[in-house]
Amino acid sequence: MSPVPPGDEAPAVVVPTKPAHWERLVTGRPPQHAGRIQLLILAIVAAMAHVPGWSALAMSLGLVLTLLVAIWAPGRVAYAWVAAAQLVQLQLGASALSYAATAGAVALALGTTRAVRALTTVVSASQQATLRQYGARDELARRSKAEHEELSGQVAYWSSHDRLTQLLNRTAVNQHLAAVAATGAPCGILVVSLAGFSAVNEALGADVGDECLAALAARLHSRARDTDLVGRLGGDEFAIVLPGLTAEHAGMVAQRLLTVLGDPFTVGPHTVLLHARSGLALNDGSFSGGPSDLVRQASMASRSARIGAEAAVFSAATQAEQQAAVSLEADLHRALERDEFFLLYQPLVSTTTGQIESLEALVRWQHPERGLVPPDQFIGAAERTGQIVGIGIRVLEMAVAQLKAWTNGLGSSLTVAVNVSARQLSEPDFVEKVQSVIWAAGVDPHRVILELTESMLVEDSEVAIAASWRLRSLGFRLALDDFGTGYSSLARLGELPLDELKIDKSFVDRLGVGPTDSTALVTAAIAMGHGLGLTVVAEGVETHSQAAHLTSLSCDLLQGYWLGRPQTVEALTPQFGQNLVAQAGIPAPREDSVDAAPAGLHVPQLVPDSARR
View (tube, rainbow, N blue to C red):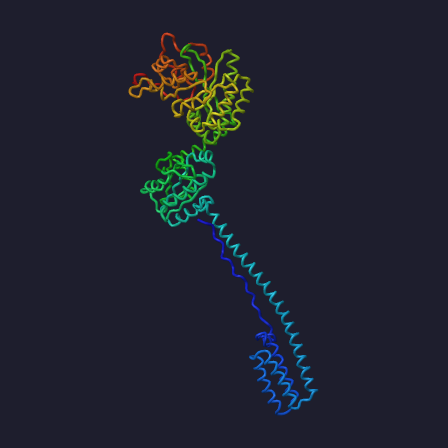
């Protein structure tokens, strides 16, 4: 929609003229006749005053004829008639003195007439100027009123519309929902939110992103029914109000509207494919909340939906889940201030010596009311809220402090690995923060391993590679975690200054397991890592056969529950220097391995080898 058009231009003001009565009487004729008429009228008056008796009547008739001649005859003929009239006047007995008096009266009358006419012209000009001033003032007032009305219309329009897409904004959507609810008819609202849209703005620029949003708005509007209303709630979130929608037809209607996202958007030389989540909330007449509550429910449902899948319908379970997530995020913020996080350490054991060569620091959260919160319940929330940045630095501080204590007590060359999130790596001052932590602890950075995930490198490779080279230049060692799950290319892998390659648990689980056997893939990964000069670590080792198989494939380090669970410092310290992998063969798991885990920590049960085959 376009803004309110300006009003039509006002016509030019025509100031009416109204000459004085005398001017209309004397000069309201063609200019060439005015002098003659004045002269003859005065001559008639003078003649009647000086010519006695019946002669005055005859003379008057002659002068009237002269007046008609003066009006319609050419100038010379008219003035000849005037002269003749004067001669007739003398012949009828007028004396020279009376003739002179008549001529003087005529001259005086003519002078007076000219003076009155000049004065009338001045007065008329003054009146016209005054009228023009009044007219200009009226025109200015009229234009000011028109401009005010136009501006008021534009303000009213943009107060209810989004400037970029020209769709209705959140306020107008709520008002429309309230109007539909007041009729008592069923109503639904579909909220569509774009996933990963910030990457479009960062990669192609905000202008391209804005054009994509405007194009999406046009597509949604084209698919909507005449009774539907499409609005933009803000950012990359859109809403479609669907009057008359019931639960029976909700899925079908939502699917029809969302088909517009199947085709990519072309903006200049760029082709952009948008990915969206969608959520539905319904008001079947029993809904007791307001319009904003219905919009909020649809937004909550969209956040719980999968990208590109059918619209998720809001339910009580969705609301409870979202409320729990909000509460958890608030508690997470306070947890860092109250120092509620602690570390457990999982050993990485050498297949050659059987001893612990490195430890991975794993963060845990001891909530004062919830108890021990599993990492998979709060790490995602910390990533979303950005609190992972502060938590990551705190984990690094605790890990290097413990490494310093182990070094002073054992004098070993032990290394500690700390996970680095994508959010941390994207921070402009991340490298400086890590460096300051190491300097403050007085630890050799070469004994600190920073683990990067492969999926993180795929999503933001340029930033990750730049930061990794800066960290490597400071002496830190780098490991690529979860290798095989992020689909990164070998060329990209060769660009990283890596020291370790960690094979993901999903490959270790399938070693020697029927048709899904991953032995060939693991063998290739180990060979590639060694070819690049990297230490290869196998994650998720949980059985005797897995450990034996990996040892036979020349894997350098093993990590998993079978060799050691995440443990406290007190439980782990006595194991240093011991051969955890027996020389005569790899022993079976200890019966007390589950009981050795810290209280409250969730420990999955080990699966016997026989069950895996």
